[in-house]
Length: 339
Image 1 (cartoon, one colour):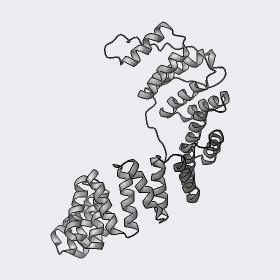
Image 2 (tube, rainbow, N blue to C red):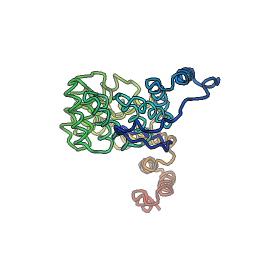
Image 3 (cartoon, rainbow, N blue to C red):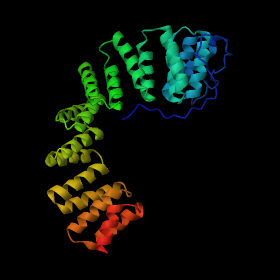
């Protein structure tokens, strides 16, 4: 999880400048004419009807923009917010809403301007401050992101998400110690913070810190079907050469869902550590069933066939590797030796 990323294509061609003079813009008629149609959702139909009766009610336009935001109908939401802001440009929360619409429309510059305007109107608008910090994290301006997160924490020192986001900034800045410290503070404030426990597991596992086990288990406690938590725990056990627990953990993951990496890692353990070649072949094969282009699984299965003296199947797997990736050197080497 590198960043929180929204990928919706921005559909609107409307230009909107966040400034004190935006009241002068022409108000665009965005009242829905289909409120009487059967297929219009009830919530939207009621808003349409209310706005038709009172088109200069900024709060109603804002409510409908929030509806469009929830449905990710970006251009309709922006139209409503332009109208609302032309009627009343004094409300900080309006700028937060249009910022969110711009952000999911991949208009980060306009999103930033709207958030700055929201904070100018209300310097204690924590939502706006946090979203601006998130935006700076999104574009990898970590110092600015941390600056705004600290502002949010001055207003609310128990803000778990602010500590989490500081941790993500420090993680991307390669300052693991501060990242762990921030994430630990986040879970102190919110003991149900799944993503913070996951990040702590990842960060501690990278440092071969045994605390990784407990952090991953806390994440699993909060989400028993989390494939990322089960896999992270299994991989940590494997990296620490605790193969019995690694196999058990991968099995728990595979009981939840087919997972090519869990199958592959299980196969590797059986190939190298337990030397149970039949199980290794079975799990490499399961990984290939999930992903027929899994080159490493073909190679691993080929090596396993070599171990049991099955030259025909070994050659077939090494050839499959090269058919998928002609420059796969380990398969080239083994195939040359066998042929």
